[in-house]
Length: 549
Ligand SMILES: [Zn+2]
Image 1 (cartoon, rainbow, N blue to C red):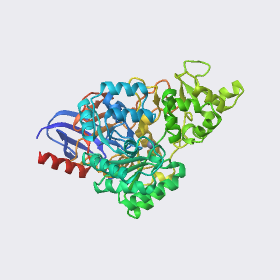
Image 2: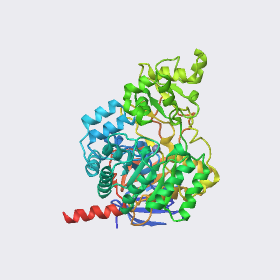
Image 3: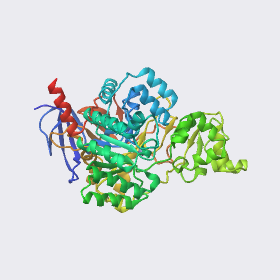
């Protein structure tokens, strides 16, 4: 027997949570053929992993990279953390239904991509019209990591009901929504996501969501939810549990804040009662750096009233007392302390890297006055660091014990569409280190290495029903990371320069994706061996369809 790769004498932690051991891993094509204390036979390539961790590639169940892949499928940011699979289509936003041009428009109008990006995509990217044709475009472009996708309830509701409507769907609309969900599930989506804090999903009542979730459950799909945070986190978690128990769908609570530890206990209790539920959280986050042109659209997506008034309407609203109140009432936008917002990339030394409070003191006016003046003037080349260097809901603090010990807690980085040729449009400084930050935080707090690895490999793989992934065992697919744990780290918020949004994690030595070497000694290569991730049940449906042909 000759192997393509043998990874030699690393500390193998296989993702089950069982104790690790020193041994060899033999790979042929995309499959792990042998895991044992020593492999005698030869290989085309031997990787010496002495003193290093050898584990399944990590799985990030919560990202927004469905359009990024159309520009750049290299995904260095994920490989450098040891991540080999990512799941997009979160928070209610997805790449179907409708044509690609309609999707770009949707993304733009919701503040998710800039106008420039929308125009570039519309011109340069091969067109798609449904889930299958989108995945063909992705594979045609190539991706270095595996990609799974959720259907977005917000996008579906928008397309069927006509942008954003604060009312329940009519029977006819409901029929149409169901049909789109069925079609997407049959074509290989892993489930559906909701963004219940955003338009238009926020106008869907629990009963509407239960109906949709039942269809997803019939395909063994998952229901992943950006919660209805405005009713309070605990209440919002209870709504997700109710949807799970009534529809029998698996539930993923997305990016839950560790500042509400009871909400995590609630999830564990629900699991004990039989609801198949789990949760991801962002280990640490700064606020977002958001350029004004994209921020204006993000503001317009706060309510259907603002949305209907459009970009111009928002700018007019910013100049009237009523309009200002309407905008400021949403805490999501400027967090609790607006004065902490820092201005960056302004090109003006008088404004640069200053908080709005400092400017207000200098100019002897109120914080709100400064915000409204900056938002409504014509200078678009300015970024707002909304909330400043740490986000209060994802602070730079060790998670409380009950969260650390909750076996259902995994990492979701919530990496949000940056822009390929314009990284300053919208970015964040810590999420590109979500996995090393999680490792460091949990390891220092005494959580076993094997348990940390289980949380970011087999736990998400099982929750999203990813076939043959998330475990380093014979017969599984060869998604493998080799990591020097002593160097595995990400710079702290103080160390990251906000002028360099493309900072990367350290310490990952080798990454195999489907048996191909995509990262070698911290260098990323364009092998594009990533595949589309289908759920177990959908894989069967797709295979049957192939057989019929
Ligand atoms: Zn979200």
